[in-house]
Length: 305
Image (cartoon, rainbow, N blue to C red; front, side, top):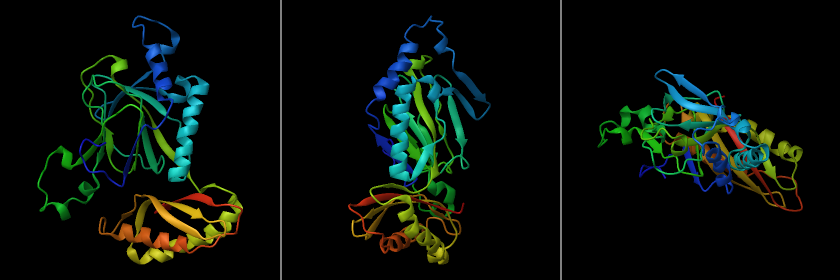
């Protein structure tokens, strides 16, 4: 999925994300079918150019597509974010198109949300470039690995994820990232077409008979204990997502869904994994009220906020 490059715990790629992707794409194709058309819905694009930073065409995604069609996609995306990340919403997404000369240079998006997403409606392979490019974690902690490294070319410094049709790329927006320069086509239908934004509003998402109040009575005190339980490992910044499976009798098991923690004093030294292990152990000891059937809850934990 990443052109032969190693995956990162800071990046997630989901192919075949949405069953109605072709219907979304068809709206775009239909508007550009007649190259000489002057219909009003073609005149909705902003040519966004910031020298040495951004060059692309963009428009608000929720206004571009028919309301019912967009709402179905939005609901699917938000539901995925709640179950997988514990993020309750997404920022208002953009629809962006990249043709010859379009690109984004490296930047970061820390204030917007704990996860960024890029959903591709790109078809064909008429252009070169257009990959989502993300700086590798080891580059930000470069010198401890310098002597043992065997290569010093671009692939050793960045992850590049091609814009394949119906592919969702979710990544940690703290890492410098961008879009490689597109070349080879001026036709919008043959360029890079993506919906993008950020997952926002992290809070507990549960499915099952246990309601918010019953969960909060147990989880709130437990979350307060996490800081002291890992304080000896150092200061951390990042996100730890946990899936809790609560049995009808109230026992719980915990598994990590996502871990973007970085130890600010010794990044990459294994402390991030130890934090995860301690948090999972603490949460697996919890006892919840009995219920008629099992409950599953996604718990997003933010460190260093």
